[in-house]
Amino acid sequence: MSKATLYRNINDLLAFYILEEVKLPQQKQKYEIKKVPHIHLLCSHCGNVEDIFVETKPLLETIFFQSGFEISSSFIVMNGICKRCSGKNKYKSNRLHRLIFL
Image (tube, rainbow, N blue to C red; front, side, top):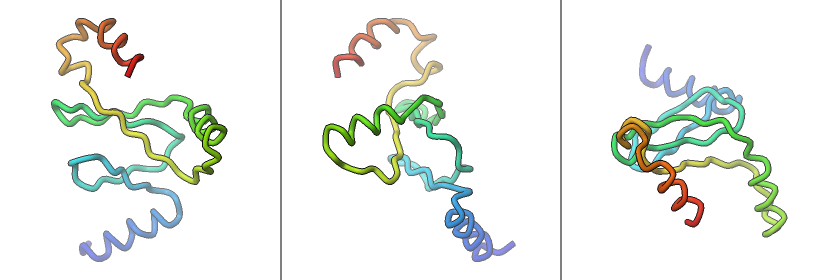
């Protein structure tokens, strides 16, 4: 298969909302099959990306009610350190406490 055919197929899958582009800071362009709303967790140490499936609707509604901004699409990336890189999750409660007050 030629690169032109591949990119044409990717563009078609994007147009039909089957694929979506994953835009991660300082990473190559990636695509994933469209799924239910989720958040990407990007490890700043190893570059690993994990999907976490949490309800994003309350966040989007809060943004609308506070700003009046009507969100048509969203893509959420949270940067941090994955469980593997954090040394078996020691000091977890201290990190969680700092996160709450960011």
